[in-house]
Image 1 (cartoon, rainbow, N blue to C red):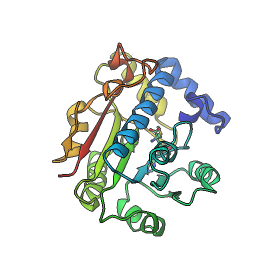
Image 2: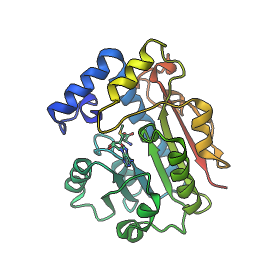
Image 3: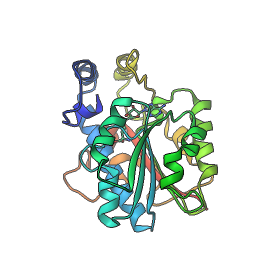
Length: 250
Ligand SMILES: C[S@@+](CC[C@H](N)C(=O)[O-])C[C@H]1O[C@@H](n2cnc3c(N)ncnc32)[C@H](O)[C@@H]1O
């Protein structure tokens, strides 16, 4: 659905039909996804500037335009990236894309089982968990509806990361969502492979625990260090229906 709404070609009729059902109640959905993707690009650029050279991108999806390895390796050709997704199609697309890239790979794992991700031989081969890591949970956790499961997963990742690591996170929210859309939107995702739920800004902030949010904090996605006047919703950020932030492990 995400690939289709971003204008990609790696999608099936069922994805397109489900995406159009979402667009029928939330016409901004494709722009919101572009805004999210732009946050991902800015966050990876920022982490590279802070000296982060290894990234664990969980819920990575299909690495479409502006993929993490492209952005990270532009700044540092030796930057390492492990993409993680539950969806085998996303993982296969990533493999095809990364065939000639010795520093990046993809694994099929579930974000709700972070221990399996952290112990995975490819993670152990490419990433050094004793050094600062960039953990990316971008537009993922709204697909982990159970609060305890989501909190537990993020806590395990926070604990495994070395001091100086960063967490870049974005998450769908219903703050600012017109009330008539809310139940309809939830219904449209119910029955897809990824039932989604939004969370409040306060609930999203809790995923960072004691990690220090870098400026400007947890803000609507388009407000996080904007750098491109063409990115969507610059003048009306609440329409993105997503909060984004980057935290650093002390
Ligand atoms: C909206 S896409 C986000 C892609 C990318 N992170 C971005 O922001 O551009 C969400 C991705 O999360 C994946 N996903 C959903 N639940 C997951 C889980 N429990 N574990 C791993 N991946 C999951 C989906 O398959 C999908 O590829």
